[in-house]
Amino acid sequence: MTRAEVRENLLVALDTLRTRKVRSGLTILGIVIGVTSVISVAAIIDGLNGYIEGRIRNLGSQAIFVTRIPPGYTGLSRLPANIRARKYLQFDDGRYLAETVPSLAYATAFAQRINIGEVSDQLRYGSQHVERMIVRGVEPDYTNAVPLFTVEEGRFVSQFDEEHSRDVIVIGQAIADSLFPHIDAIGKMVRLNGRLYEVIGVFQKDPGLFGGFGVDQFATIPLTNFHKNYPEIREVFLIASVRPDADVNRARDDIIEAMRRRRRVPHSGDNDFDVADANFFLDLWNQLTGAMVLLTGVISSIGLLVGGIGVMNIMLISVTERTQEIGIRKAIGARRADIRVQFLLEAITLSGIGGALGILCGALITFTIRTLVPSIPATLSLLWITLGVMISVGVGLFFGFYPANRAANLDPIVCLRYE
Image (cartoon, rainbow, N blue to C red; front, side, top):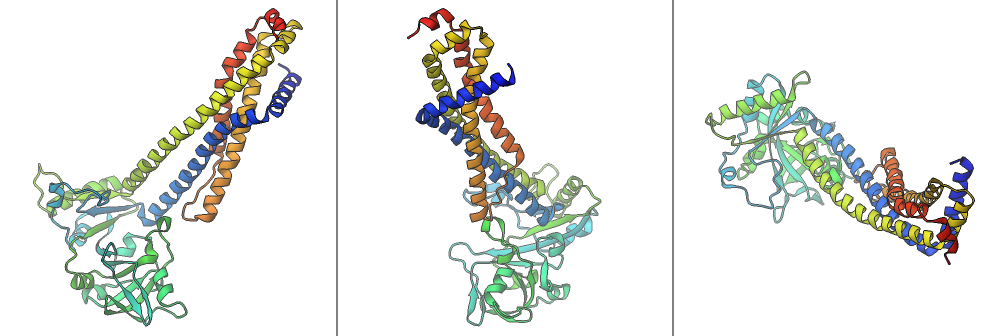
């Protein structure tokens, strides 16, 4: 088929759309809905994937966590009896790992209080106060093991503070802005749950994941001080940072072996602790986004199926309405392939317009989400734009082939007699 013939068929297809605006519009709508849902959700997931990977890098791609309770536990279900019976980790377990596992650069313990339900920690300075925060007891190596916690003003907890259980505190940027909106926070005395603490540092700004708890909402004190003032909290967490020249998987195995010796786990017994690294959190996130992709795929498929059926329906009607035209074209020499391509181009034009509108709608939704909800960094990639075009063209080809083939196989004599 020549370029002129392709152009002529496209003009015929557009003329068909103009003469049957409502029918064509309803047909295109299904394609628009399907492609829009694919583009917008893919943009959100792509943006979130990049954001999560960046957060994990800041948290420490070489970090390994040791916990008593599985790290993926949400608290919505009751833990099995064998996990509830596990011994608590100890404050000096971090020091033990640092001394016995050569591949570790740092290993440290921490404990925390999170404001949930009726529990409410308060940090006060004069008439100003903050209630929604996380109080965490840490050791001096904590910022080395978790790069996300970087001090911007002042200093972090020192070994002297830890050894003497000093009443010193390092606070997040949001807490500092609330308590000291117009003055420097360093050196000021604040009351944490009624007890006086000296502010020695302020962390770099970090609003957190999706507007949730981030470094901005943290208040850290020496671990010994935390243990002295909150002895009822027995849950201890360990975090280790692997040396840059060491293998993370090998270090993970060494940590497991060291903790089994430390906790006297029998040779044939299961671990009474859990170990997770950055890959665990990435895998957990990928599972969540995988479920979103599956759900979106189902919804998009329904929209595309409806749109595809609409394309097939309008093309079958078009074939019936233009039977005499098909007969005339065949009588003057048009081949079956010419008729087939003509109607396929019409179907592709229908679905292509729907795909283009769907991409535009998806881009608009992506921009709107990124503008109104900055914590969801939706990103529209060229890959998904290309896939949107391919999907819409594919729908046109698939659902338009049967009507086009039917038109191509019509008997020209019968067509000329058709009224």
